[in-house]
Length: 213
Image (cartoon, rainbow, N blue to C red):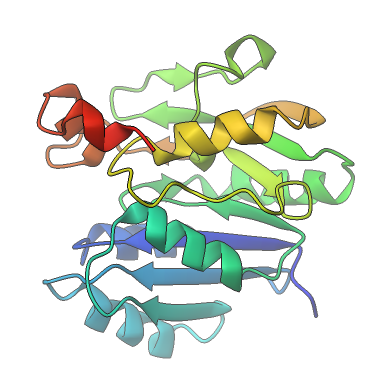
């Protein structure tokens, strides 16, 4: 069965949080899960391989870079591996609201959208209500199902250390996708989290030149 949805997860040194995220993914035959380790120095890769063996009900593939190349490089390799009609970038330190995510997948079957959006809830309880008025300034791909055929040829800038999803989003929106806004809060965004790329960027610990392609 060709999957309807590819869930793509780049991961680096998230030996515990990535397992919490994987536990939140619905178990269903119409999705594939591809996780790619980016040269972790902790037990992330070993934990992922053990999880795959212990959870055959999850259609999961574990990949690994031979060293740390960065999230943009890893995201591009994940996209090259995806086979689903749609894909979703599910970040390794976040988790899903499983029942709502299932609801979204069912809605995807009835949609002809190029992009389907969900709402996010962060650690404080604040909810990002992702509607049309926010389509340009809120760029995270974590809140979107995207049709693979629509974005064919768009790549992440591999020299960018953080904010790579923003550049990808700009290129995608230039193609004028048909977007469906569901207003379903199905994604938990683990923010703020000490040590995350977003946190480092906000604290000025990633240089401006690192954010430019």
